[in-house]
Image (cartoon, rainbow, N blue to C red; front, top):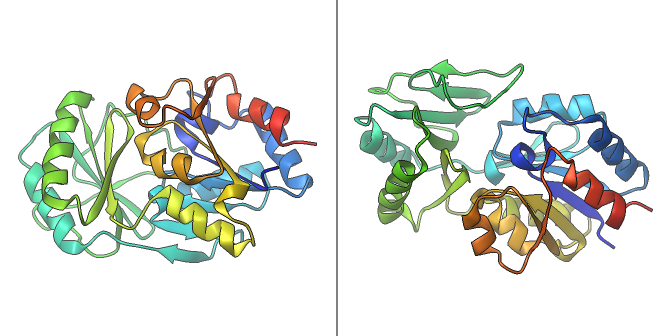
Length: 266
């Protein structure tokens, strides 16, 4: 029996309008009441996730920025790993001439962008971005840099993925969190490695964890956990990368909660 359930948010635990639906909330509360651990494991910013945790009303560790930050139940940061400054500077210099690219930075408590993104549906109720000067960008304390496009063209972002990997594959973890969002973290950062650290803190191992996700930024977590469950709505690249992992329904069907009821709740 698994002792820890870790879940991605967008496309996985949250509905398509980015909400924790009532049935899912009820199941997660029951999971806590039965002595099992729930962990948020997301690419989102920790301030954004902390608001969701407060609405949920249970203590839970937060793995955020794809594992670059980990907060405990008291909201103390227990781990953080920043992207090297020269990598941030080089990526910005590489992409800044592409007028379709929006450059996003998670820096400490801030979300910074070089220009407004009117197309990508981030749907953060109480957490929004501010702007940075692309010719004088901040380089310190960046948990992750991520790129979106105004036209949301996945194939054009893949071109940038290939270019960034060609330069920094040994020094950065480069992955799509969704087809329209390309993310770059430090090479030692992933949700899977963060889950491993949190499990050990709680006296467990990865074999005691079940994890849910739908993006390539979930790959390590889904492959390292005792059981990794892939959403039916996941991009085909995720399913191809994890051909032996169980596939369940959609977030709008609250498939994670349904699975937890069937397999984890007493």
